[in-house]
Image (cartoon, rainbow, N blue to C red):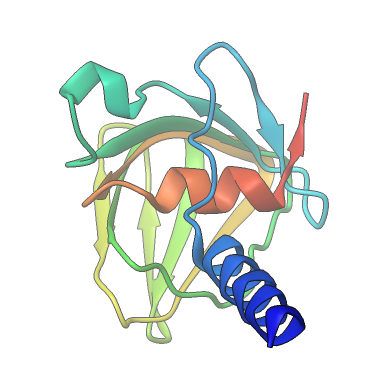
Length: 141
């Protein structure tokens, strides 16, 4: 009986750890996508808002980047600072230039592509939590 209780406790603890949210991305650090070289620089953390209403980061896309189709659990809004970012939502392509905004909502599929100059953008995810999920899968610099 004692061993069954210990086994149940360990199983429950492991399940809770697997469901635990990723640690927040850290201000002052950068995170690099190992599959494409995109660099994420956090501009906010939950302490700034006293909650997780939004995340904001600077994303730098290298030349000829292609993120591949993916989805987010939050609304993702891009504001392009430099270069040109091809924002493909559910197969529909929009070319975003500096000063332009692109948005994608869950469960839409999105893909980000750049040309020879690359691109830099500010991205906002609402609600927050998306930046931590992304940063936990990318390499911290």
